[in-house]
Amino acid sequence: MRMGRCGWGIFWTVAAGCYAAATVAAAWHAPADAAQGPIQKIFYLHFPVAISALLACAAVFAAAVGYLIARDAWWDDLLAAAAKVAVLLCSVVLLTGMIWARSAWNTWWTWSPRLTFSLVLWLLYVVLLVVRASIDSAQRRRLVSAVYGVAAFIDVPLVYVSSRLLPDIHPASISLGAPAMKLALGAFFAAMLLLTGGLIILGRKVEYLRRTAGSAGTGDAQALNPELARRTS
Amino acid sequence: MSGTGYAILAYAVATVLLWGYALRLWREHGRFARRR
View 1 (cartoon, helix red, strand yellow):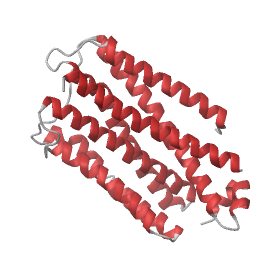
View 2 (view 1 turned 180 degrees about the vertical axis):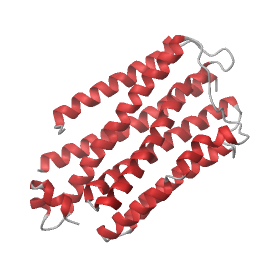
View 3 (view 1 turned 90 degrees about the horizontal axis):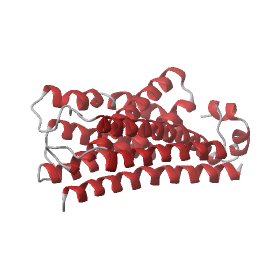
């Protein structure tokens, strides 16, 4: 499906409306948690962003496998877009978690298994972007990124199971009593899935446009012929 | 800072980062689309 500027405008309006509605539901509709008070409301945002970050990492993995099988630049564009979104979402997860920890644990950071594996995950995808930027040859960059993208995914299940299998101060799960709490969490899940999907799809398009516009001499031809651009390394 | 203050800070940081990146991407997409 192709979306023009107008289509993307409508999409971002819907996503922003969903995000705003979720924020209102979390801030005013959901009651304050009896044990934690207002800082528990960070969880409505933190948890969906964390799941979205893992999905973005899974998208990098899928794109890496797709490139290794098809050797098509389309997959590399997807890998680059998903890796940037993974870094962004991991950054938001770490920052919101640190703010919550400062209030709940009276410290910004502690080396618990979940937090450590999350920081490693962020570092892995930052390094992926740095490595991509440092390789000039397009063919080599795509191959190295794909192999690295597959290897980096190993940390994703570790993040997920760490607080369940190892002694960890990070909560493994949180129970939500009131229906308004579940509504706020569900609204943020919807908003974050829309936002994550939109950022990856639009990001892939921008990566493709940047690649084809940046090819000296053949740029215009590639921009006019997407199939040519996909096949040209 | 109170618990409400930390909650507002967390939402502000997340909103600026997430939507700042979305806006930047959308503008970049528009710039490439106009060039074509």
